[in-house]
Image (cartoon, rainbow over all chains, first blue to last red):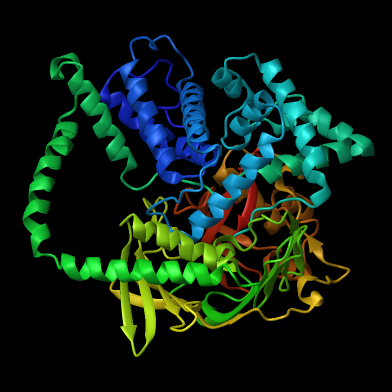
Length: 184
Length: 430
């Protein structure tokens, strides 16, 4: 669950303070970046770059409260840069590179789903997709998503509502609900 | 209604839920939105690799060093120690590497890459695959569950690469069918069923096996990058490729270690047909302590077999107990704020035989008589502290109960709240 690192009032200022922050946020940021990029190595590169940037700019960001949503904002922006660079290189916004060093079974399934989700969200306006990604690929609340995208909570909720309505029209023909496998 | 999708609980959600109960139009709309949202929630939790944090800290320390030295920062000696360890490790590697059989490894790796590339090409032309094998697991339990001490249970997969693709996975007591539009899971023991999209996680890590060519492609990319600990052998014309993997997940508590293949240190042994280069067999060996135990093996793989249409339909009993979406459960009468509270609520409800309360935290539409008989009226002996383990996105809660038949059960409940409504539910473990 949330640790004190995630509830920090102010931006961490020392390497010591970054340690618990990384411990507490690394998995959720890598998870989010993976489902944006479809590649585990790229996801870790992006998140590492963000931590370094967060350290480099620590003085300027000293006043920022809500460190966690801001890190998501930074990761999201960096992912957009990576996707744009890929798009320039190949014309394809989603790479098909493997997650090198990953377990072959689980990474094939995860990459497959990341690509499917990416295609699905490309079919709705980007501002709506951005809010839905931040809510669906993380455990951020709408208030935190608002911090992450630099908008008001009502705007975020309305983007979510319009976006999910479009997805509903796209996805409902498949029918049924998606359930996680219970571990019983 | 949007507040129902928030990670935070809102005071308004209760009144919205009450409205949904009395308004079929809004309820259908909400259920469809819920389906859409669930469909785009990733089924698999991705975590940072084992040494990621260490690498990130080193990168920050490097950044700090660029800024002008230690005096500006309140560094901890531990970071200096870790940082200093890098050149030492580099020197050791320089001394040790020449003693390794690099030539043999390179030759084996190059031959392995060639074989994998040939196999990937051969596998790209198949229309169907039918794999028969066995797995050390519990009948009726999760498809991903393994245990080095469990007996083998038969396992069978059928996959048809049509448009849309269709597949079926079956083991004793549990079957999943994906008919091209949706997937359905049926568990015979509890007469329980669940429905989901084609990507629903009912078969979890077995799913990639439905496209063995995809796995080989993945192994090929890994081998080309030199990132796999792989070994190729050729005995009497039978070529096998062994690829060793480390366990994934958080094992500060090792409860989930070796309970699934991704959560175990293991070796995949791929066996190829010498003539066609197709995958002919697969074996997974788990390295648990000093023991190497085969937990999964497919010994019979048939390609391009014609499947009857009935294979991809799953008739269900009329009285089947349907699993329900955790987010759509009625709120529990108590305010449940954590894993221990939901475990306590669930066990107390079973003790009181209050089935309505059980259904507030256990996502099925009704309880089977088997569950009622086995657990109704139990006595709670103790409930321990929740912990995380492995790749499971929720918590495990230790408990001990005395069952109505007089026996004592000491195990761990699996509880989670990673659904859009952040509703705490019991996911298994009883």
